[in-house]
Structures are given as C-alpha cells and as structure tokens.
Length: 224
Image 1: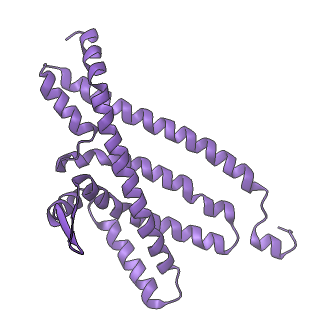
Image 2: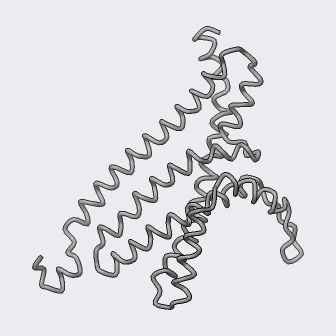
Image 3: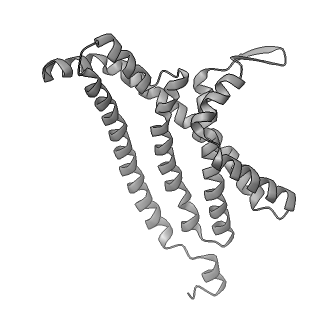
C-alpha cells in the first residue's frame, strides 16, 4: 500500500474511530466521577477521629490499591448481570459502565490518598498545597484514558476495539501498523493538549494563591 492509499483509508475511517475515542473519554470520566466520590468518602473516614471509621477507610483504600484493574474488568462483567431489578424496574447495565466501575476502583484508591493529604493541608490553612490535588487528579485522568483501551477486551466499542474492526475491513498487509500508529497519535495528542491546558491553569492557580497567607503565618501576625 502507498502512503496516499493509507492516508485516504485512515481519513475515511476517522469519524468511526473518533466515535470510539468518545467512548474512551466517557468511560474515563465516569470512572473518575465514581472513584472521586468514593475516594473522598474514604479520605474523610481516614481523617476521622473515630477509630472504626479510620481503620475501615485505611483497609478499603489498601484493598483498592491492590485490586488488579484488568482482572476486575472481567470480574465485574460476569458478576454484574446485564439487567438488574430495582423496585420492580428492570435496569440495563451496559458493558461500558462495568468498565467504568472497574477503573473507578483504582481511582478511588488514588483519590483517597491524595484527598487525605489535601484535607490535612486545608486544616492547617495551606490552601495552595491543598489545591495541588487538582493537577494530580488530572494527571491520573490521563492515566485512566490510556488504560481505558483495555476495555476493548470486554466489548466496549472504544478506539482500539474499532481499530481492529477497521483492520479487518481493510484486510491489507501492513495496514495494521499504520492503524495502531494512527490510534496512538490520537491518544498522544489528547494527552499533550490536556497537559498544556492544566499547566496553564496550574500557573494561574499558583499566581492567585501565592499571595494568600498560611494559617500559621496569620496566627503570628503574618510573620514567617
């Protein structure tokens, strides 16, 4: 195949592939939403003075750290039925949501650790240090976006899954390399753009919070 032929084929299939990339983003955002809520609750438990709550939060966080995401993809796929009956209503559970739940477990462990640090900084009036949770959260979101391609193994029609469909449809020797390279470029471009945006936001955040006095400085009349 010539370079022109490869470029033409990729251009024709780009809308189809980008729809799959939309699923990567949807799965990742859902996982981050679920994991962030659970992780924040765990962080509050771990910061609690109640011994049972603190111990429970630590144990659950440790369990989420060691849970293998790839295994959880299959486990949740087969353990959660396609339809659940809730108060007499039949609720469909799509496979992409099961994938989000699997990734959300890892997110919850990450958020629990980082949110706990932020909570303790806030209690001391260290606002800037506490807000560093946001860029860390974004960096982990990028990790989840990259990992979301593994959801193809359970049938989520994300970008890598669709790339295999395109390769099968084209059925040309050597096209496999270019198809996966094209997919990798989309992930790379997304990562670079989001990193640049977060870098700009972080700089603005630093500028705005740089002049805020810490609590310990305020207590001493602003004397370091």
